[in-house]
Length: 405
Ligand SMILES: Cc1ncc(COP(=O)(O)O)c(C=O)c1O
Image (tube, rainbow, N blue to C red; front, side, top):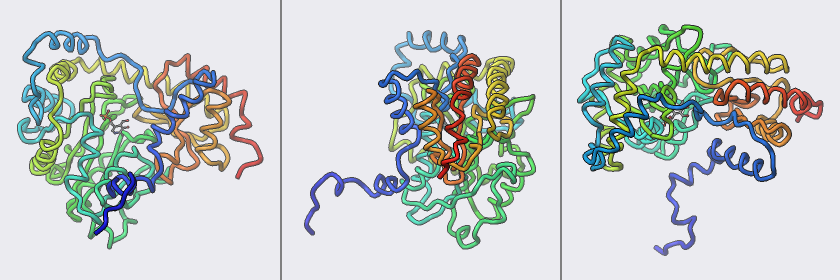
């Protein structure tokens, strides 16, 4: 057979499949931000979920200290240091009252994105289905598509409390489904999942022989005294669950790239086998500093939540007074705001950036059910949020003009 020439012929189906989805929304908005900055616009970035708070000082001090130890600069242990895995198991018991075997039920990740994106490659064959919420963090869908699998979207709607309706899932699809992605506290809607819903999900997964991939990146960022639940708190759920956690949001260690997955030991073993062939673990200096993070007093986390809550309590009433429709977020670091008129979220987002310097994420970039919404992140100080609202006040025409498409 004659080999085709040109770059396109060399690119694998994995990336080609992705091109049907358009660009990764956050990369696209980062490009729009660069352009705006180059043209002299002062940008207030409420787009990416990139915490602006500093990591706790004890953790940074540990990082510096551990960097002085030459032993920590050697090749990392693939699955993560047992000291960190034990600290995670202890934290999990304190936080969720769930016991984990640090050796077999905990695996260290290079950020939870890495684990979530690789998971479908480890478990899906071409044409296998994964259930993916819509709107959602784009990595679930993209990981499935790159693996050659198929996505069955589960709309998250306001009238269902932003929870997927399990009773509406197509039976024939279910027979071909292996993975079920969930994420609460939810990005982008700010919803929490009640325990009864998690119980229902666990029963559903067992009945339909699914692997539950529960993304808890925002597990600790909750408001008004509420707490999130782990799926592993549900008796028997460990049989079919992998739960992903992150140091990025709770401790603002986003650039450090550290996360972990806990759950069923057989499933963990598969992911570990896959990763061992692909990466070489996380710098030990970072893992040792993370042990310090897990030992911090719960008050440290409570104070971080208060900061985000204060910002929420500026942004939400401010946007409401401008006519936007919003459910008060109960967790996470985002405000999911319905555009007052039916307009393309991408158009509104780009126009807002050009005219007011306020950078948001268009809901359509997070799934088709996100159309009509913008996601505002709470990752700038309150004063900046007030400035963003003030700028927006002068350009209401962007979202109320009568020339709507
Ligand atoms: C819902 C959700 N899950 C996972 C991640 C990835 O976090 P990290 O890879 O930094 O652990 C993010 C980051 O924005 C997210 O919003």
